[in-house]
Length: 290
Image 1: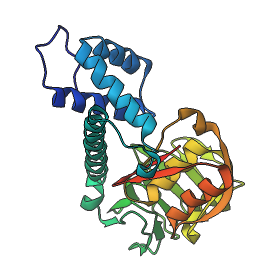
Image 2: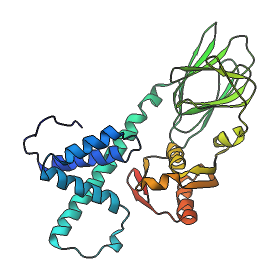
Image 3: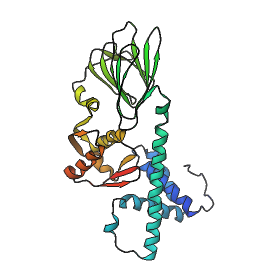
Image 4: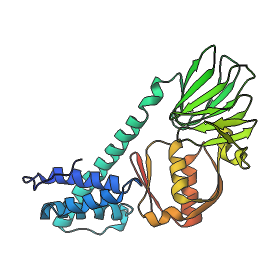
């Protein structure tokens, strides 16, 4: 999606609808910057047709939780809008599915990998044990001088075997050394040391007081204690297909506590509905919490 520098020629309404959908996906992704919001306002002002497409897409986003039984019989013009909105919702689901598939690409090229919702235990050539979390991938590159593994995606828990060669975990270009230690490393840079000694670069990593909770996924559990809902949903998204979005960003700060079963990720969403008065609308490859 690009922002034109001059007033474009008239675009078909379907193209404008697709562009408006792209904007909603970006603006509600949690990664939109102030510059993105400014660009969106300029896009809306390009023409009355742009403004109308934006209003329709925004209305769909706000209305996405409404069920068919809650809707009254509409006038012909309203029915046409609803037909367009249904197509837009389907396009949103396809975009999310495509994005999710693209994200998984690095996984299949690694030495070891797990699908979403899967965990796998691996014993390396030196005797070290590795447990891969959901949607994770690991590449092994042992040499005579060091034992190096690369986290291509996701997260892994390491129980390193005794060996004169250093044990190095490369995560997004950052080296974690933990010979004779038990620790987990995530692709996003998080390191949780359960026992032993580990370093990130030249910095020593302290043993995590809540290591048991942070690595509860190895026991098939997720544990949250006053965590913001936005973080909880981002974590849950790692264990199931598709995306989980918040329709109201104000809900992201809602504090959530509990112990949840990873083998039933949908149960966490049901608990959120029951315990916190939230609602979840399910679309193909997409769940919207509101």
